[in-house]
Image (tube, rainbow, N blue to C red; front, side, top):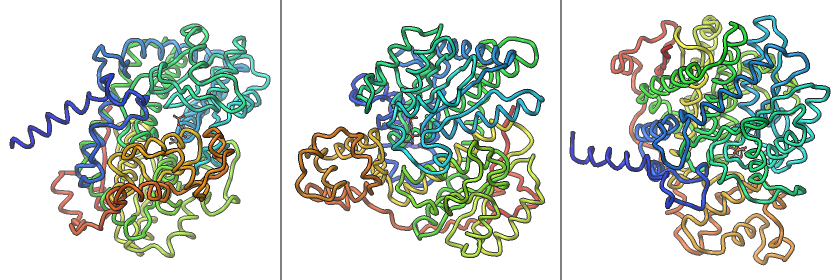
Length: 589
Ligand code: F1P
């Protein structure tokens, strides 16, 4: 091994732990810090991007080093998980008039939906009554697109919860906010604390409680941190907080990535363990929880053992985006939801158009099973079935576009084959992600999430939507994102950033008093603002904008590696019916 490689490995190891130091960006909570590992991700090759994402994801599973932060496997975290799982177990044993509600905003709400649907399905399969329900800020349309303004409303959160739980005797409320920051969730937690006879609140997030958001919420007397402090007073009896640190996101603040994955790991572990205990007449134990979480750690390793193939896919998708093409995920079964979720997040995170990266699910809304049912009438963006793909996208599909099929051994291969033939008539840029016999649905979902997060993030990096490791084209659509935008501006300038951002939002040179004195949440009516133009405007006066925002040029390296070559290089068995170049398979038990 060359000296340079060793040097790089050494610096990567120290970068892995650097964020834990109390001196590292102390003004930010963990979920908003910039990850030292990815500070040059914007200049990295596709292979290196995947390697960096793998290193960031590995931080989720890092063991407790006895420092400031508790981790996924810390005793304190596992103990709280155990207590929550036992509460779920009791509800499953005596479900009459009881409910387990999962709630969140943006990605957290979408995952709440995914898990509530999945565990209700498991109950139906056992001929049991369903006990799960979900709430997402902004309602069902927020499952497919970003409606972040409603996240700022604690009263709306509270009222939605109260309405959903009317007449219930017992409710376990699981509020997810990766940053311990969403007012919508804070309102719900506070409501639960005020009604302990019925509600038991659980908070899931990835910052220490001392880093919960301190900003006042509109029309509400408490801050998120004060709500958390009240929960702490009841901790372990009437309120639970599960908040391991998983390290900063690869793209600063992009909680859809590790935040989302860790949410899925923690909650699925709790719910699956509770189901096993309730239906086999045993009890949830610490060991069961740890074993399940280690299973997810193996999913992580197996998925990234296909890093070269993920990099090829990411590069292909990046090229499509660079030349104005589209990336379509066509999925079967529950992987469809994972695809829809990943695609929907590109809009607020990268300022993408909904057609840039778009998900389709085989049975459309029938497979979704969401509370509000079919949303197609809301417009083309809400057309999500394969038949919509065939009528809306296929006719204009070309080699500029990338199509990725996601399916498992449980899906109808004949159906997949039919789609392959139709797509291949239009583009040769067809790839597939297939999960074989080993593993279970939840593991396949996590594996697919990691791959899709890498593809959508990496392709936008290649398109030039990331500066260092900051999203510079985000939509400033709520108060958290307003503050994130301010901090991004501060990365390079000490200019009066609040003023600069407000001038750009309101398109004025002089700011009237009523605008400057208003709180961040008051500016939400003025969204969405294209942050790139804000950033350009603010920086023009101080810096060469080219240096800051630098769309990357299409790469000259040809990516059309013949399928056979990939096949041989990785010694993978290609699925016989699919002539596709990318195949990722296998999750061990
Ligand atoms: C919720 C959320 C994120 C989204 C964006 C705005 O965050 O909607 O999912 O990506 O950052 O906020 P949180 O409450 O889970 O921290």
